[in-house]
Amino acid sequence: MLKLACASAALIALLAACSPADAELDGDLEINGMEPAFWGVKIVRAQKITTIAVLGERDIAGELPVKSKGEKDATILTSKTPEGDFVMTLRQGPCEDGLGEREYNWSVVANWKGEKLSGCAAVVKPAAPAGAG
Image 1 (cartoon, helix red, strand yellow):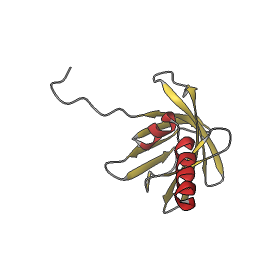
Image 2: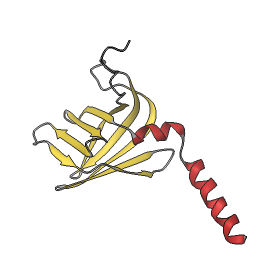
Image 3: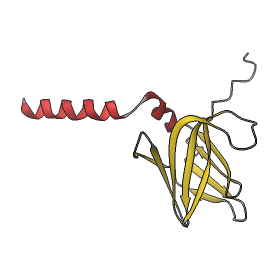
Image 4: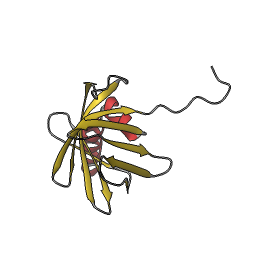
């Protein structure tokens, strides 16, 4: 009985740590930034791939990111690549990528090869079926 109570308490604590907003990061994402150079990340769950593009470098294919909790309500996404881990720290809130062409709900700071990249992230909504709407 004590084991069941402990297991239940652990499950409740785990579920409480996942917010509804945090759950949207489990889908496809598009991340764009201009600091210090143009960079972007596309996470496509169905294809099981993360594509990382940084101006001046060739595009890099990485694994789907692993999500963990960071400090002060941050969510960390870490994608393993052949060139090292691409670590992104996301915080929910309005963000502008500098172009003003898109609405973003997450700010992002990425660490890549010792460089700090700043940008914004948005959840990619599934395309509407043909003929719908």
